[in-house]
Image 1 (cartoon, rainbow, N blue to C red):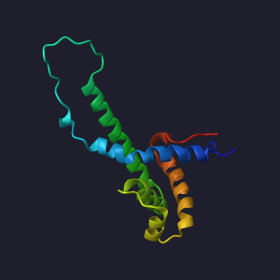
Image 2: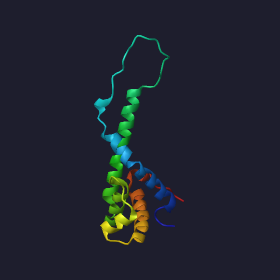
Image 3: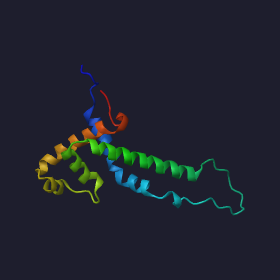
Image 4: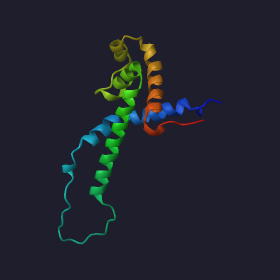
Length: 137
């Protein structure tokens, strides 16, 4: 047994893939201005009481999106160069590039991109703050 517990690479890769596949949407959510939140309106008509504060929900969703986007950017800044570019072209640029397009950009074979992407996703999971994407065996 090593110094650190063994991680389940498949589950870590899946966790990283799940977070990164949401990155564009979360980025748009984080970029939304808080001034877009509307003030409540009163029309004088009785309504059933609602315990949900919609403005609070919007603010919490915005802050959560900002935090995840910041965490993704922090993790990306730590991973290796090849992993960075494969993940960047796969998840961060609009539109996402195909394996063929990525291979041409970084001068690797198309077959290597699948390996590099999996390696990059594992590095990303390890670099994500507080080990939130890591799954141990």
